[in-house]
Every structure is written in structure tokens, then in C-alpha cells.
Length: 272
Image 1 (cartoon, rainbow, N blue to C red):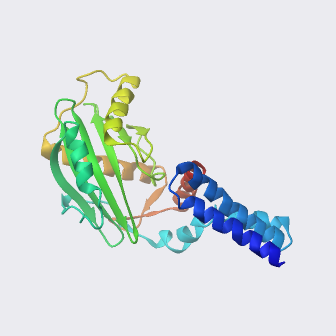
Image 2: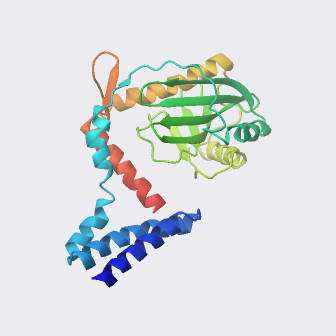
């Protein structure tokens, strides 16, 4: 029994060590090693392959604990008006100024710092535009409790209201996109310079000709971003991912929680 305990602990420690090295291949190997350690714990310590399989698979069901006990009780405003926001401090978002320099180096001009916040989350956007290419860029920073992350976006819009979005959002998105939005998802590690190249390639593949994008001034651009977010919310209300709770509050439905779980599994497969 002692040998089995040491074996399980050794495999678990090895998995954690691989995950801490920062290399994507080793990180995935570490993730599967931790799952393997869970299986070994059930097989060798409990003496059952079924228990081992249950412990291994349980990693993929853990989000349901959060969905059932936390997410289903959260209510968020239906309408969120953008307001001027102070950029996050360097201690909270140390890459912010370097990212700003990267975006401006690609010919984008800083337009505004806006966002919203409530009891559950703060969302900050530094908005840029490239007048020559009629493309907008955003540095987006989200804080939710102890979790904080950033991502970059590039968006081009047609006069008919279609939006072509390239982004390196690090997780599976928690809402379904409107049919009016075409998404080009890039790896979270993609630099902004590479994102601009990929966005141009994306537009060419979609058959969007030069000069076909709509131009916005600074004030219109902020309004267009807010309109995009509200369009996502309305679309998810229509398809049952979200539901109204009172006059100006929304919440995830059971179908929405199932959708989030599937999104988690997709992320897990991609990360593992």
C-alpha cells in the first residue's frame, strides 16, 4: 500500500511540475498526468478501475459545482452603458503599456478608454482605430473576483452591419455570437503584429474587398462596440442561453449552463 501511495503522489507531483514549466507541450502533458494520477488513486488505493475512471472523469465535471452553486444565482444588467474608465494599474495589468505601444506601432490611434463594472465583473477597453484600413482594435481587460485576463481584438464592419472579428480571447466564449458576426479565433499567444496580418488574410478569405468597410469617427466607434455587445446579449436571449429576470436583469438558463459546460470541455480538450 505504501508503494502505491508513493507512486500516486509521485505521478501527481510530476504532473504539477510539468504544468509549471510554461511550455505548452509540457503543460498539456502535465494536465493529462494529473488526470492519470487521479485514475491511479482510484485503481491502486481504492482497488477499483471504475473508481479510478470516475475520479479521472470528475475533473471534467467540476465546473458544474460552480454553475449550480454560483452562476445560477448571478444576475447581470440587461443594458450596460459604457463610461470613461481609468486604465488598470501596472500591478494589476503589467503588460498594458507595452501592448499599447505594439498597437500604435501598427498604425492605430488611441481613441478612448471605456468600460463598465458591476458587483461581479469589471470590463475595460482601450479603443484604437486605423483610419486608413477602417479597422478598429481593442485592448480588453476583464476582472472577475480573483480572475483577471486580457485579450486583443481587431474588428472591421460593413455598412450592412456585418462584423468581422479577429481575437485571441484565451477561453471559450460564454455566449454564442450573432449570425452577423464572423469570428477568426487566434491563439492567445499571438502578437498584435501577427494579428493584423491574420485579420487581413481573414478579410480576403471572406471576400471583403478593400474599401468595403464602414468608417467611424471616435464617438461612433465606441457606440459600435457597445452595440456589438448588446447584439450578442439579445441573440442569446432569443436562443435561450440567457433569460430575463425582471425588467433589466438577465441570467443564464439551464440550457445556458449546459452550453458553458460544453465550452469548458472544448477548452479542456484544447488545453490538455
